[in-house]
Image 1 (cartoon, each protein chain N blue to C red):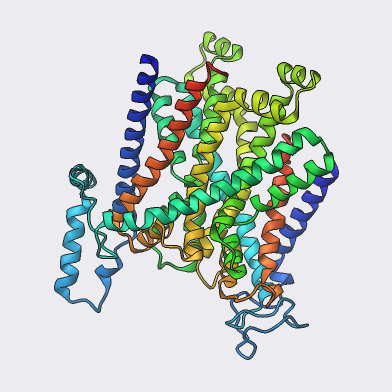
Image 2 (cartoon, rainbow over the protein chains, first blue to last red):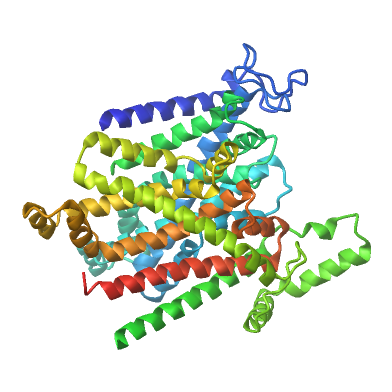
Length: 268
Length: 287
């Protein structure tokens, strides 16, 4: 399946590059309104038409992709760091520390993901500046997504704690902090990397769900979630097929991530 | 018998602890989160009204005190009053639980039916094209946001339970496929097939029983997943269930409602997990 993996990497790279150069590729700023052409069909000037406020949809898709594709990995990084810290300390220390921290992880895991996300997002201020809503949304994703990873890291750290090299380092008088940072943490890197890649598509989907429920990134800043909100205004699927482009892009990206995750070896 | 009673007591205490901790987490989050009740700054209300609202929140500010009072009420069957909907929480729950129950029931049935329906033939047919096709279908639904699928189902005027089922199906299919493939490699299964036992008999007598604890664990996971998916599905499809209520409570920062809903959802997931573990532990000696 190497060919499928290569295609996925190619697709993701193309989408990522296009979003990175949104400033150059987009025909208009994402918030600019063409008041004479609200809800316009695709044309030479507006490749994907305009939304009901007259904003160029193609530009918004490019900028929205940039936000979703840059911030979902950022949130995944935060979740992986938290999982590494909590799981690493729990597994390394063992005893009551492990039991306490893993009980907290169990509690977070026992709540359905979207329910937890919805409740915590709604408890944060809702009427904030758009850029703050972007930060809040992805910060929450990062802060709540640590639990599953922490369990895996904890198991890894526990086995490393009892490994021969750790015992030898301890016998040579290596301090606990040094042992944890120099010997245990580097060996947990592959687990954390796997957790990071697993979290990226999960967070992209979670942001999309929050966006549709009106709790994600707020207007006028575009993201895949906020762009998908436009689908709520549809009365028939066949009406305006170009409205489905953000959804198509999201599905293609998440599928590409899933294909990459099929292998144990993650792209670095 | 004594062992089973001990297991039941252990799991019951675990469910209780997790539920209480879940409720406390909701109270703590609602009280310590930086947002405010919008009514406190609503200029349409009189100064006295806003002061009264602020005062009512001051009483709730102490997390431990509020939680203790709420637990006291709970012990007497009083779940409190919804601030946003101005109705007793118990009444709201009794109205909406059956809607979510029906949605989850049909959704899980559809998801399991599809997942197993595609995974079981895979073991017997062993066709690569079939495997690829079924896996691609599962991957497709794994990549669609729940709210979008629900929205598409609204446009198609299709039942919401089907959307929920299609979102549960990939998880069931992937796990069932792995479990069945593992079972297929077991020596007693190979012997049974070599002796010419029918596929149905091999499936029900030799594939499924040894993996009973894992199947039960998958059932518990799918219930948690379905509860999670129910939130956007109910909101988008305008179904008056627990998920939609949670969304409303979260938007209105309705403390009593939010705490009760978190407690119920935690209770449901913890109970499902414990029941699957308990059954698995009971069945293990038989399998």
